[in-house]
Length: 282
Ligand code: 13P
Image (cartoon, rainbow, N blue to C red; front, side, top):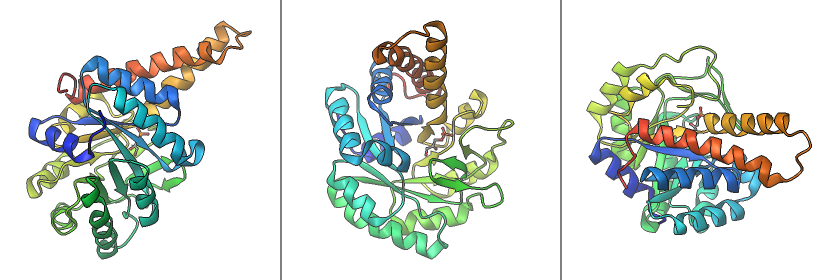
């Protein structure tokens, strides 16, 4: 069933677990995510990045997601990932998204607050939840590039003030994760995470969680309510296709190429749901 992002986030916050937010770009990725959620009896957030909206078009993304969510017996929210403007948020709300992120992290503090407040004003009456970002998460996600030099960690006092003034439903924090593949093992600032958690009640979001070791996720999930995974799905998808075509070089049926890719992504998503603690919560 399609539900508001807030419903999923609040249940996770109250229940002391995190829900996976997985990026979709096509039907097979979406089916892999939702089937994983069904099999694990887990709530799930599916989300569309800027690149996904450009690649598939908002109508396809919204249409596919609506069908998948309506068929699902577990709660599913559809989120805009790293929304870039007020007008894009409005467009997503019109197309039935149940959650939106407005990424004002590159703006000065007061301007970030102002854009989030504006988005909250249109989103909340439509039962759409709002995620904001404070601090700058490094790495590359589609067209959004934040270099190591630009990345800045979230200040706990600012996070508390930000959540209070914006009334956002979720806050993405920068504590050392980055979008994309890591070169070494990422070092997360758990002390900062704990301090943020102590100073505000708002559900927290960990971006760039692909490649973060399980032991670090096991700590993070005590404090965050939403964990974003994209790269690990991409890797599973692409590797399965390469492996299949190596074994069957004359394969011309797209279904036989994409079938194993979907199965591989589903296993990744299922493992994450168990790790995040959301399995069995739907
Ligand atoms: P990864 O690609 O590192 O998993 O990050 C996903 C993400 O944070 C989407 O916003």
